[in-house]
Length: 87
Image (cartoon, rainbow, N blue to C red):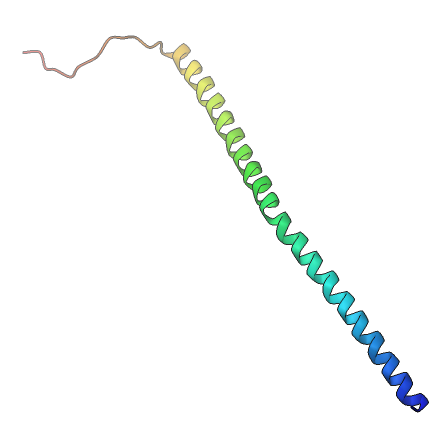
């Protein structure tokens, strides 16, 4: 074999080996990313739920404060007012 053919063969082997290693490395990264998908989804859904829960609690507090304020201005009674005409 000539020197040029030996160099070409060597470079081809190195290129093939590097390609094999790179493909396996990328494949492993993709598998790890797929495994993290459900974990990230669960964390995202929990964060979304927590934000909604905090918003609901804040709205409930505001409504309670507003009710107390309005009750102080006009106390509630158990009397039912009916719109009947007196004749």
